[in-house]
Image 1 (cartoon, rainbow, N blue to C red):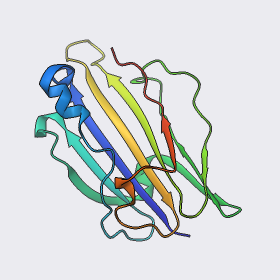
Image 2 (image 1 turned 135 degrees about the vertical axis):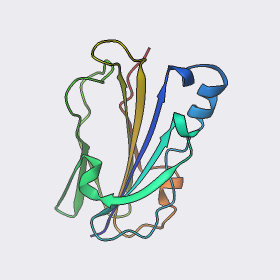
Image 3 (image 1 turned 120 degrees about the vertical axis):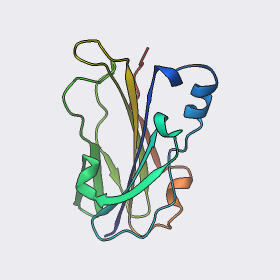
Image 4 (image 1 turned 90 degrees about the horizontal axis):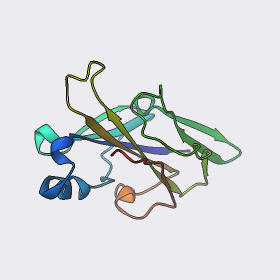
Length: 157
C-alpha cells in the first residue's frame, strides 16, 4: 500500500514572536501539494525566518522524517519520534500512535524551543508538521482537512 509522507518545518527566532512578524509566521501553511515521489520518498518543506519564510521543497527518503511508520493488518501505524528532551516545551504525556486505514491521513504537530548552551545566542523555535497518508491519495490531499489531527504543541513562552 502507498504511503504519502510530508514534513513541514518552520523555524524562527524571537524576532517573529510578536506583532506583524508573528502574524506572517502564524499564517504559514501546514500542508503543501505533493510532488511526484519515488517509492519510500517524502516531501520535505522548510520555511525559515531568515529567508522570509519562503518554502524550500526537497524530496528525501521517508526515513528523514523521524516518524515511525508500520503497516500491519491493513492499517498504517504512525508515531513521530521525539529525540532528547532538549528543545521540548512542557507537554503532557505523549499521545498514542495513530492507526490509519486506506484513504485516511494524519496531521501531527510538534514544537520546540532552543537556546545556546552558554546563553550567548537568542532563543530559536521550530514547528514540525508531519502529514502522513495511507493508500492512493491525490497530490493535493494535504491541502485539506486531515482525517486525524494530533496537536502536541507546548507553550514556548
